[in-house]
Image (tube, rainbow, N blue to C red; front, side):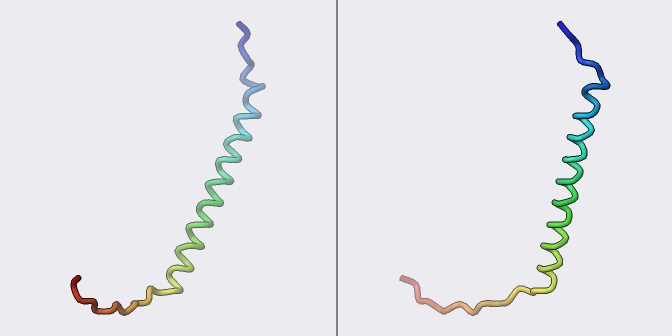
Length: 54
């Protein structure tokens, strides 16, 4: 059984967390963009036709 040294795994773990942080930031930007566009474009009402029961 050979154990890996913490110094060797530290670089890959750090790069993993950098990737997670970047993806989280991208997700946050997407949500802000979505809510900004939604607030500038209000919901419009659509009239419905009155249909008789079958």
